[in-house]
Length: 331
Image (cartoon, rainbow, N blue to C red):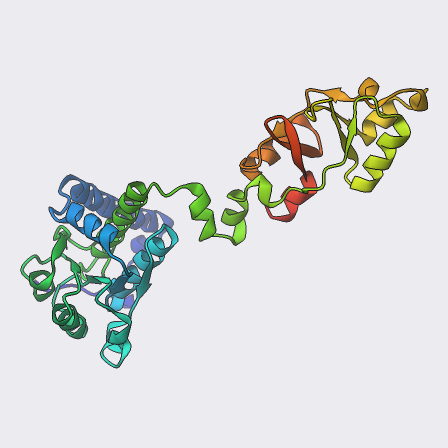
């Protein structure tokens, strides 16, 4: 079947309009979306076996591919690594020149090739066979060299590419990407991979900030006074704490209230004749140490306060200030 290449001379005014661009985008997304739905309805028979093999491996998942399949393999490796499955990408050409030493008998290989006949993968396939390294193949051709050699065959549907000439890797790479994400999520759920673990691999940027826990940013030195503390003691504690607030505790050491700079100003008349319990705000807002920083910021904003006491079993163990939350980038 002969493909038609659109040259500048072949472009008509109607093909250069914003509406034409929009139609092209809609067509591509519809084709790729329908392809993903087809894959979801006909998941490869070996998918569950591949997940089980990845769960059992003692080493790492080694991914490889060339061209667009290689770019997808890099992305899958990065997704697996960030969600609890140690992974890396090995370039197949570099593998043939020494990097095969990165692939050990404790590892498992995931090789991607749309055709399944990529010459550059031959040495990796042979290496897996020689050292009995489990091999997961991902290709549209179930009878290809790669898939015949694979222990687990993740065959993607052989569907038309979404580009106008039917040749540029579009639908095929979308299907590979989706199948890689499916592997990663299945592994996450099998390992019960939680947000705390996720943050371990994502400490930077906005994502890291959103997953930061209160205990990681709180001030462990908490200014505290008893309910019957005279105001001179309250002011000293507040000044020493440097956060414009002090906690007020009862005889059992439980947080009974807080005194802020604002409380001092509002009760300035006869202030020195009072004790902490007289002006403290009772039943203050508190959070637990394992609370997400983003949740703490939401409480601060909603309550229109600047600081939150961190408590365990009612006892103050820290204090987190609005500025601490903003400093780490929580929004």
